[in-house]
Length: 218
Image (cartoon, rainbow, N blue to C red; front, side, top):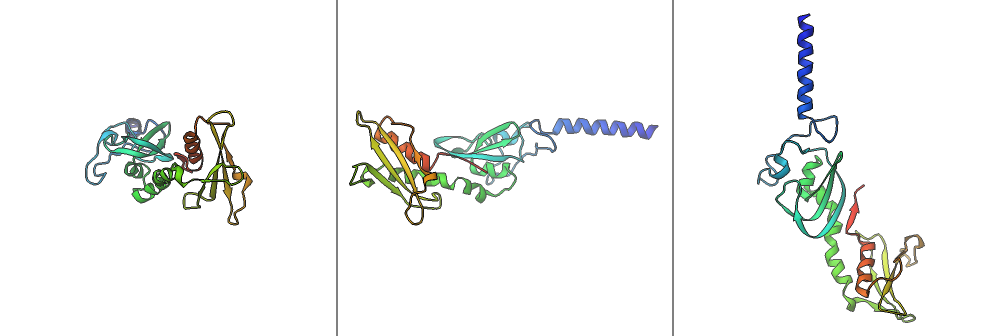
């Protein structure tokens, strides 16, 4: 009888312990393990030091270019431009590359950096794309066009064509995807939804359709 009573008491205490230290955002494991030596010897800060935010078993669902900087929502210290959106149950945080590597449990900063590689390539590509001196003019129609070569971040050679409205200064765009033989791949053609406010707006929208500032992570 005494053994059963002690066993029941032990199980009750164990259950109370698990409730106290279990993750409030998901079930099945303890996520309140604090980090004290990352990043790079600076010591933990922000949500790494609290007692409620999960510290592991996160999944990266999206990366995006903020086109500016803001503070990492995990360490609450580093300024971040290329954001990793990390999800844990019903909780999401916008964080930097290093915090993301520790939150997903891989501790692999290089793998985390690869997720944002395409975004890091965007600024230089955009600068070149928006330089109108690098655009050409079609002989038959007079429409300006730009050719983006196939690359690690662009699976097709793209021909971007702008068309000006006959009645005002608005422009539409069309993006043709070309195969290895230079033939158009119809299923990959992208068109603007009508005319846009100006030439520069149409150019930027066309670029974003090829190199989106937000990318889902499979």
